[in-house]
Length: 77
Image (cartoon, rainbow, N blue to C red; front, side, top):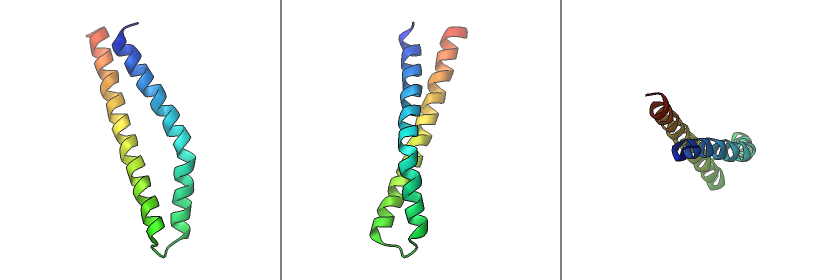
C-alpha cells in the first residue's frame, strides 16, 4: 500500500475514534452550560472547550477531505 493511502486512512480512522470518545464529554458539558444560566466562570471555560472542539472537528474534516481528494487524484488522475 502507498504511504499516502496509509496516512489518509490512518488519519480518518484515528480522527473518528477521537471524535467518538470525546462526544459524550462534550454533550455533558453542554448540558451543564444549558442548566447553568448565571454565567459563572466555569461555564465560560466549558463553553470555550466546546468551541475549540467544534473548530478542531471542522479542521479534521477539512484535512480529511483534502487527503481523500489528493489520494484519488494520485491513483485515478
